[in-house]
Length: 269
Figure 1 (cartoon, rainbow, N blue to C red):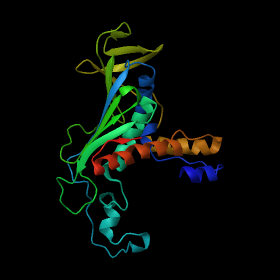
Figure 2 (cartoon, helix red, strand yellow; figure 1 turned 135 degrees about the vertical axis):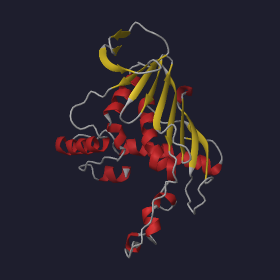
Figure 3 (cartoon, rainbow, N blue to C red; figure 1 turned 180 degrees about the vertical axis):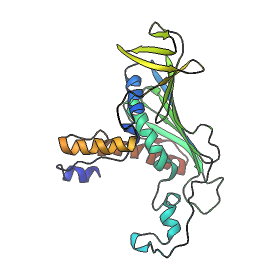
C-alpha cells in the first residue's frame, strides 16, 4: 500500500484505524505528550471478551466461491483462518497498538509473547488468546492481551506515568493522580485540572479519579469522524492523519508480534 500510494501521489489514502479519531483518545494522547502524566513508562492494553469470537452461519444458497471463500463458514468467520486474517493481534490489537505508537512517538524495538488455541477447539486457525510484551526506546514497555474467556477488563488502555495514571477507553478516560499537586484544584462537584496552561473540567469519580469529558461538538463516533476527516483531506488536499505510513507502522507492530509468538522468540524491529 505504501508503494501504491507513492506511485499515485494525487490520490488520498487513509487507513481504517478509526479509533485514532476519537475525541477522547486524541485528548488523552495530547495530555500524555505534554507531560500531564509525568514520564510514561508502561502502557497496558486489554481487549477482553467472554465469547468465542465466532459468528453463526445461516443456511443459505449463496455461493461465496467467486469471492475466494470455499463456503459461508469461511466468509462469515474469516477472522478464524490464517488465509484471511492475522487473528486477535491484527483485528483488535492493531487499533490499540497504533495509539501506543502515537503516545510513545515511536515504534517498538522488540516484542515477545505467547498465544494459543487453548479454549475454543472448533477448527479455528488463529489464536483464541494472546499476551505480548513490547519494549520501546528508553526502556518503556507496553503489553497487549486479548482473551476470549473473561470480559472483566473489557477494552481499555492503562497508561502509567510517574505523576499520574490514566484508564483510557474509546469514549471515556479517567485520570488518577499519584499525589496532590498545585495544579489540582477541587471546586464544588467538579475537579479542575490545569495542564500546560489549559484548564480542563472533569467530573468527580471514585478512587480519586477524574473522568475526562471530550470537548467536541456534534458527532463523536470515531468511525463517523474518520470518514469526515477523510473527506476533508480530499477537499483540502491534505495528508490524512492516519496515512499509509502510520498504517504500515501499526501493521509491522502486530505482524512481528505474531511472528514472535509463532516462533517462540524475541523479535527485534
